[in-house]
Amino acid sequence: MQDPEMMAKMKDGKGFIAALDQSGGSTPKALKGYGIEEGAWSTDEEMFGLIHQMRSRIITSPVFTGDKVIGAILFERTMDGKIDGKPVPQILKERGVVPFIKIDKGLEAEANGVQLMKPMPELGALLTRAKGLGVFGTKERSVINLANREGIAAVVRQQFDVARQVLAAGLVPIIEPEVNIKSPERAEADRILLEELTKALDALPGDGKVMLKLSIPTQPNLFKPLVDHPRVLRVVALSGGFSREEACRELAKNDGMIASFSRALLADLRHQMSDEEFDRTLGQAIDEIYQASTVKA
Image (cartoon, rainbow, N blue to C red; front, top):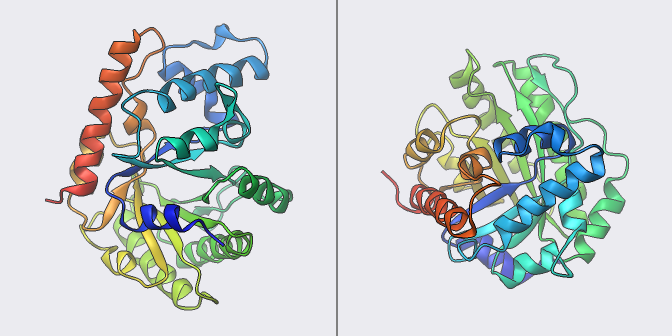
């Protein structure tokens, strides 16, 4: 049973979801973007300690509240961590922000133009732990590089297999079949994905709702039927390598889609900033992404 207050916020809340879920492989890149070079740590534990400090600084910033940031996706270590002695999901909920957890373990090698998710043998235990910590939902990512229907159908099938397990655990899944924005077949991949997602949603048993995290489509409002689908709680957009300006401009063309940005949210933040400068810079990014999520062109 999902928390009704968090469910209502996800369904109708004005704002966007912050993606704070860079994991092991992408952590050095995230730290470098934050102004911390690789030589600053000597062990994985020290590296994860630094990224936890970064995320803690974001989450506790006075501008990071549920007024504009309605949700946040966490890396597993962040979910298990604490800020000022309290579990991170609890801190988020106290700030009016709905907590999610990234559950995928990375991507398989490309086949049929797509990258499926690697196996998740400990998923059941992770879902139980997340539920116990007050997490509302999950996020799991695959990648679509080409407009190969067999490959895209396999991505959607795998995503919905996982989503059913998440729903059974009392959490709300964010299904993320990312279309590579650099794909030469991006527009056709968008159309095939729309068809495959619609079929999977129509066949979804029970009455649970899912969320979708999608690349911003080449054709504005292509995914509006998914926004309006009765089994979809919310459709959120990833920035996918766009700059914040580009991502916000494209997102604003799509009715009903809100942002779930990572790089486009965090790109201008630096470790060396004073707290005042950090909060001002983060606040400006939040304002721009909130605008694109709530005011449509």
